[in-house]
Length: 54
Image (cartoon, rainbow, N blue to C red; front, top):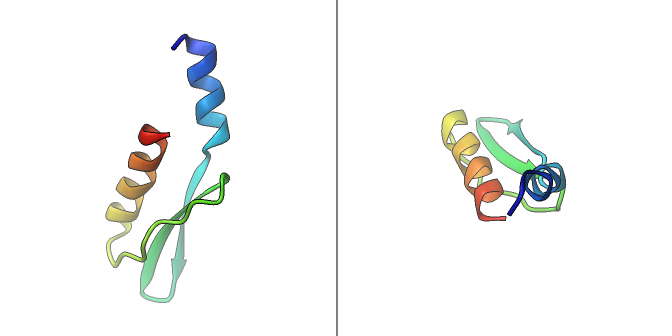
């Protein structure tokens, strides 16, 4: 995979972490949603694992 393909893949999967009450969850522009987590750091890890797997 060259640099352009990797850049395109990353733009296809832009993740954010949203708070819902006491929980945080990761979301992606592709429609993926991670499980609700109490730890914001774990939600960020879920998001990074999603991008890495894509």
